[in-house]
Image (cartoon, rainbow, N blue to C red; front, side, top):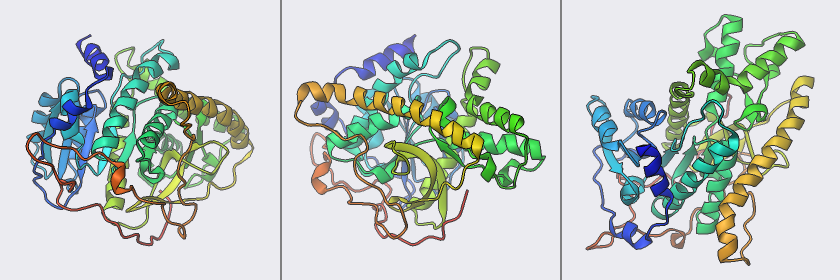
Length: 412
């Protein structure tokens, strides 16, 4: 109950001046390496995710934020003898410090799904949390890559996009809904059937991140898997409902926290590799997309230092996958609309003349295109401390790389 009360308080309107004046510059232990912020670090996903990130040698600062419990989590993981420096930030007043100069922000904040909880129940709580945190990102680290875990991802990513558009900081190439767990599950289940190491399996998963919107392309799995139609349909449905499988197995005492933390850490690792200039980084994520008539869609992507560099081909689908695609489009479209309407309901009241598009700025469809304009200098609010103005230099000691390098592509 205490955590829910603090979450409710987190959603209450706050004074911008109080937030701006409270920020302090934090030194980073490992100069030259990225700062990663975890918003919701004390939760069921946030804690194991924080531990996994602390194990990564290519992180300079690991900034942990939550509305309750952050000091304990930070103290715990800080005792690990690994490179990242850990900083602790508790409550809305410390959100600016948590975010300032971050290169990658990961959001597992919110409440997990429980037995009997409807999507509306989950949406009504988590949508407001994601909106509030996105407003902070727009102010204090507008150039950061943002990876959203908070469910329902099909709606929370559009919410974040609308917040960033309103703030003038939206970069479609750097906003992601983390669907890596769907890929991990598909690989694990296929690996079980084929009796091979799941790490050697690749099943592309497209669409969204809930139920029927999750579309594993089993016909494109590597190594190939040959199943009768009935078994292929059963496997697809198991992947789509795998989250419910975990919720029921935990008998009301949790959801897929450990596997989600693992998947999020793997996705973060890929993002950091791309940020630091590694070539051939490919991931699947839910992003602003032109591949279908929907403004958001999950598919395989090639990443570079600027974010999304290329949408990789989805490939030919078989009859079962094509049939599921029709149901996917209808369900996902409704979820996207719900998120956009939630984000804009306040803006519509304040300014009826400013209509926000649903997908925003474009992102490249091939490696010959650029990732679009970077944020203009005037697009972000520069935080201040009480005595002097801070220069917007990343706390890791270097700016995000600006040179776009060609990569070799490839699959997962």
